[in-house]
Length: 114
Image (cartoon, rainbow, N blue to C red; front, side, top):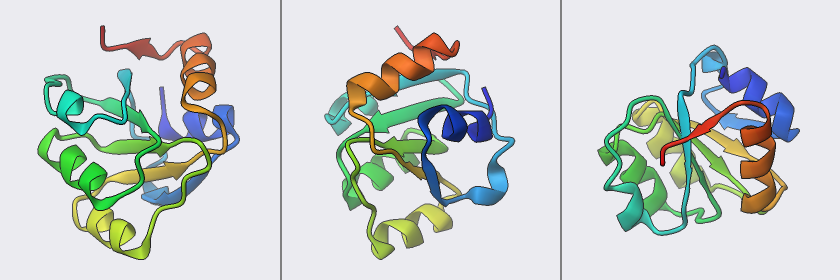
């Protein structure tokens, strides 16, 4: 699924990486535990989380995750945006809960990693 489609489904807002709306997601993973994210081995993963801090961006970088949805109306900081831009990571803010975000994307055809 394209990032642009994800944004529309979630009625969300791209914070950085807006020029990459054609980037395609194959699977999604939801977690606030970054140690769990570090175990992922898939490509084209969408990370859904409510953890809005620098550690999330650093974890995405180490895991080669190119797109993050911040759920629960979490707002990213300027420092997070700068690091995401440096690492070519798309960041999306969404007002929905993690559960609802996952449900909407699953219903639209996004597959889970497990």
